[in-house]
Image (tube, rainbow, N blue to C red; front, side, top):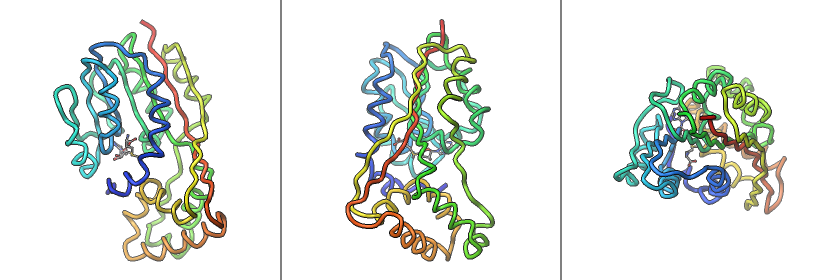
Length: 253
Ligand SMILES: C[S@@+](CC[C@H](N)C(=O)[O-])C[C@H]1O[C@@H](n2cnc3c(N)ncnc32)[C@H](O)[C@@H]1O
């Protein structure tokens, strides 16, 4: 997917709160082998590396645009590579970390057991994923994509969130032999100028796979989306609540 690092970075401040929350769950040890799945622009991977003394941190992403931006943070102990998270993850890790990325990967019932198997004994997993798919700003995208006027341009494409109820992640962690299981869902409040600002937020994330496919219908789709969202989120400012799942656990020695 053609991610736009500039569009994504516009809302980086709003993304730092969940990052700090997931970071707080990590038990810091020396010399950890760490992988950041879906590292994006690398800014948060670099912050993660700063917190982990003498660790080797590898950021993986499948977007050339995002990785190009990430390379500025590369240094001894911090590398970035192109890889698809959906492919089997190589190696064994003391920390598998992922921030706002695994909701892009299908079939979590198969993905997570595979990832958990790559955590070394005594190692940890720490994950944050949006679970905001029931907000009107996201469900409207699916509704509009299914309308006749856009279904053809999109060739029938719609994207539903693969994110499961939080209970399921807790169960998968236990089944895979993890302890210190900490799983929760949290609302991150965002107060934005108006509903058009919400559209700017979704443009950097949820809308990415649609914008890739819409071709000459892009402007029409965006205008329809803007108009409808104004009806649902009128006035200024608007409250855009953003729900996210955070979890961490460690593999029993
Ligand atoms: C919303 S961004 C998050 C970036 C970074 N972790 C952060 O929190 O700032 C999601 C990232 O996941 C990456 N991504 C999505 N699907 C992927 C896949 N199948 N394999 C690797 N990376 C993927 C995207 O390229 C994008 O950089």
